[in-house]
Length: 152
Image 1 (cartoon, one colour):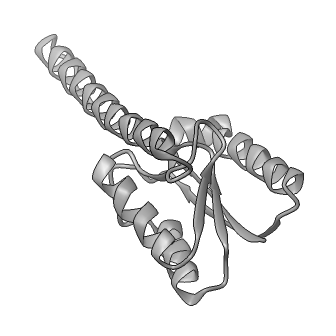
Image 2 (spheres, rainbow, N blue to C red):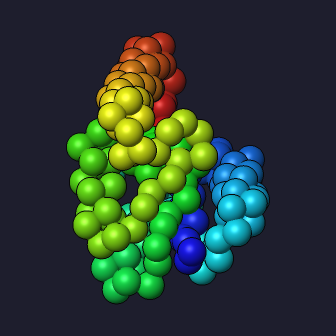
């Protein structure tokens, strides 16, 4: 089976720590263990999952439409997208082109009704977590500004 590997990190700090490399190592190992041919690695390094317009994700979707892959391996649902509606959109689009999506952490969407529900719940929680992080960041900047610091 020809698979694509999709990895994403959203911050420069994650880029510097090499978390994209650890994702790719796990994805490569999973592809090898399953006997799949990893035809391409799609990497969105520094793009938030709350955005749908990501260069590697766009190329991945184009490859799926062109029929050059049978599956996609991704570490977890929140690496694919942090917004639940985007997760559903991407997964359903890929499935429409006959491309299965497998997450290494947790079940994959569509394995069975319980797995689908779990992926959906994880998507909603990821979206909530993103909103909380953004709110904490905003409040921290506001606090520093009130203390006379110049937040960047």
